[in-house]
Length: 104
Image 1 (cartoon, rainbow, N blue to C red):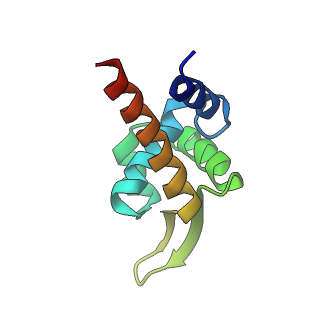
Image 2 (image 1 turned 60 degrees about the vertical axis):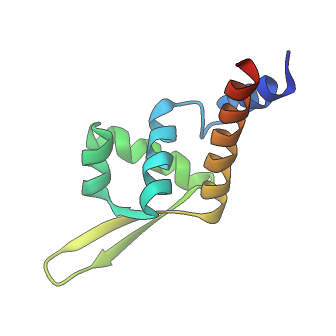
Image 3 (image 1 turned 180 degrees about the vertical axis):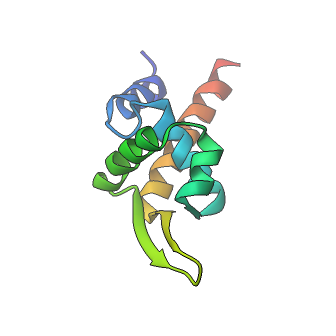
C-alpha cells in the first residue's frame, strides 16, 4: 500500500476525520476562519443537533473554538478554526492532492 494512502487512512480513522460532516465544517472554517452558528448551519445544511454534536467533537479535539458573544441585538455563538485545526485540514487536503497527482 502506498505510504500516502496509508496516511489518508490514518486520518480517516481519527474521530475528527471519520465523518464527512466534520471535514465539511473544517473546510468551511478554513475558507472563512470564523462564522456564526446560524451561518454555519446554513452552509452545511444539517440539523442543529447534528451540527452541535459535530462541533463538540471538533472542539474536544482542539480543532475549533466555540465562543458565545453578546451583540447589541442578541447573543451569538461564534465558531473559529484553531491553528491546529487549520494545520490538520490543510495536511489532509495535501495528502489527498498528492495521492491524486501520483495516480495520474
